Length: 405
Ligand code: NDP
Image 1 (cartoon, rainbow, N blue to C red):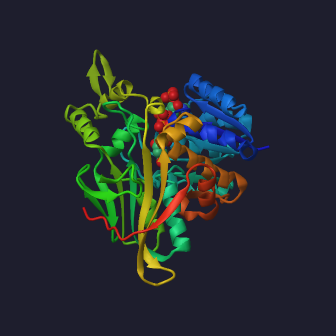
Image 2: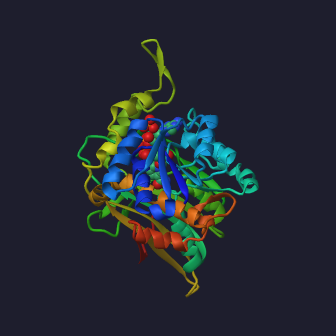
Image 3: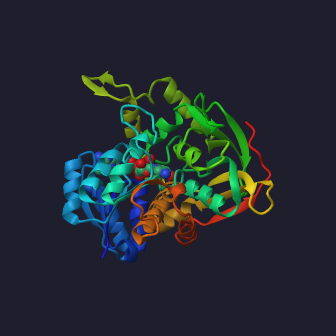
């Protein structure tokens, strides 16, 4: 029987643990290990009630390679799913190498002291994973993750060459609170307050944070036409490298005026800064303090109503006609349906289900390939089938909508 360990008992870890338990025949003995044991225990109790499956729990500090590797060796896991924070990516990859365990995560490494992410630190593990005969899959959430697979699927089935990609992420859900982030507040705010970046004709073009916006008509009446803002997002880096013939790739996200207003005020008064300040004799980071007073994203589950839509607007040379054509490949998810299934809102759900699906490809052998891979480098077909089977059905729309900021 296989043995699987999930590290991180937060909002996304909860969804991953539920979904792995729903497919216990594939994942075998399932463990949930995290910094705070009580959170893992609470999730395991929910899963027992929902599925009858026993999830074992453990306390682990994923920043500590020796401690984590010893735990992995003792329990002899086949696969580790890193659903902690991006700060733990390298230590967990080191622990997996030491213990001989396959690795998967949902977000690329970011040094805690510098709000800057890129793949180079993890791509540097390529030879070590190859030599060890181990597979590491990077960024198996929705974006990155499903968005990379949508591109790979489009390239395999529809286009001889992809010219442009616009990844568009809308959360049209409402939690009724004045301000909350829908996943880890620290990671979320670091991402949104960073400069925008997109790739065009081999060059990275930098913008001020949220400087470029436009509107997009989403293919669901509950979402409608919304303002979207250009952001830098990690999958741009790997897709710009791995999609042959690509001329431009950008990433867009919806934010309400209310969200932007709150964020601007917090930024203007220094609350989103990671520069430590002295407070009553202690050094504190304003952003870490802000995280403590903001709602825990896991608490938004019962409150959030409405839909999300995440997809890729892809223009390329059609394999059939030889002409330029555009398609929007997307998923629509409903916050309340997600909560009814796994006690989580749709943001954690859309990130967690693809982690389980990526892990399914790995553990079943389809994606077992020693080395370090982004999802567009792997065959998309069975992942796409699993999206339909495991809760994130996708659709394809022929479009003539062009995004002009
Ligand atoms: P949370 O903050 O809710 O959960 C993180 C969990 O990791 C917590 O349980 C935390 O423990 C645990 N953790 C943190 N540090 C350590 C450590 N050193 N050792 C062991 N456990 C640790 O975050 P989310 O669930 O919202 O996000 C999880 C990941 O998913 C993040 O990397 C995020 O970037 C990614 N993500 C990816 C998306 C995608 O589409 N690709 C979308 C959304 C999120 P404690 O409970 O003690 O704090």
